[in-house]
Image 1: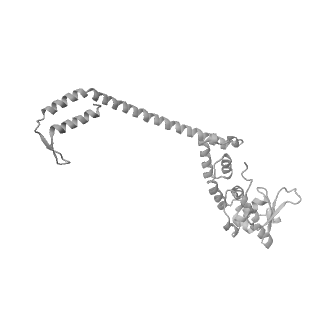
Image 2 (image 1 turned 90 degrees about the vertical axis):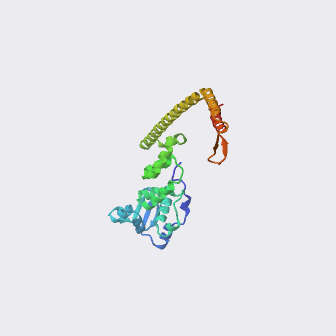
Image 3 (image 1 turned 30 degrees about the vertical axis):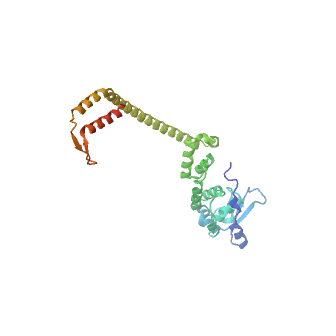
Length: 269
């Protein structure tokens, strides 16, 4: 959908209306085709425009037609959009207004065109909180919003099937950038998979080695039982020892028997 369709915030009280009724304006912004008999007009003040925008400052400083006729031809926006933009430039009205999802597209278009960087930065910040789409990617590319562009491109590349790539038709450089990011992401995932496969292979080899050692021990269980019995029989029944933990006096034969039985249990006895 067109990013510049509806802007509910445009209905806010306009500083332009106040300017025109108070005699504050000294130039007129003109909208629509120059061939129209009665194009739309909007009274504004040149000092407000010049202080906010180097484009307007250069326009009125030079001997361009606008500085002579006091009429500014606006081709990049409607009267309603420019009125909103002008309200954001006004010292008083702008303090009660904020960039939002409803007005960000119009304000970005105008703040970029007229190089009003503070307002453009506000628009960029708002856009980075909104959902990613191919339209948002193209918008960021068109207006030079690097962080927003990187965010959108990375998101689209990681989930390409969920986005309508037809929207990038006619924008070969952006489309190819996304494709290259997809290829890079696939390569990184393949390398990660290969690394995991290597780790699994090494773990399996270690497990097989451990199982072989355990199997060898189990095979020697009978020999261990015979040897332990002889050791048990060789200990005098009267032999005693003091447990270092409990300080209790125990039979040495019982201690040896318990320990050997524990080992045999671990081997599956």
